[in-house]
Image (cartoon, rainbow, N blue to C red; front, side, top):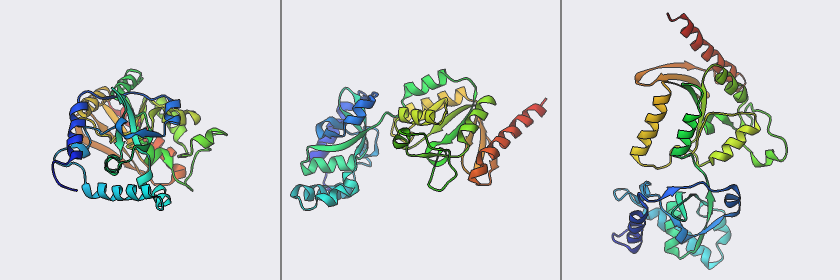
Length: 301
């Protein structure tokens, strides 16, 4: 099963040859994302930039074999409930792509196992991640040359029992189930009045437009929303985007639940301020740090 030059490896190499340098993600409409919950295996394509497709790393055939055995059990019937309750049955996360079909973002090993097990369709979840053109548009629409950044999943969203903003009214509370950290909307307005653009980042595969609507439910508008920040893209494109952002923003201040870190482009030194970790006073403490930045600027000749 782990041997070289298998039929699957030949097919994978052909997929990479066919789509690398040719495929590109395209936005998928909200109705399409809502109504499309399964896809034929022939319309699902591996991401050429993913480690799964790297000849030096490649697929893990032990993982594939485990998934394959569960898919085969499901075909026999008695184990269907077990399969539906396991992560083998979770939807593959995909992006719609040109020239056709969907690019796999998460679930390459399940896709390979399903193909080897003779399945025809798999459940999918379509997302619209932030793309290069989106970042260029955000920078073009920016109002300031300084920015504050926050991690969407670690900072903006908060867990059960944490100090949180009031949830949106019905029916939006059924759509947007994440809780927003207490004080985040007030902090965004404070930062924007102080001359900072606000950007939120997530390594998770959230749809950019869904996050934008979620923030608007709380009367929050930010300059930049970057989702799927850990997605596999070419090193050249990643460097180009990083240079574009750092070139536009000489100063960046990163805010998390425990600290505020201020950096400047081209300068290895950084300025760090520790927060108490108290959720109820978090936004007030962050504001005090920024007021300190302003005070230092006024004292400079």
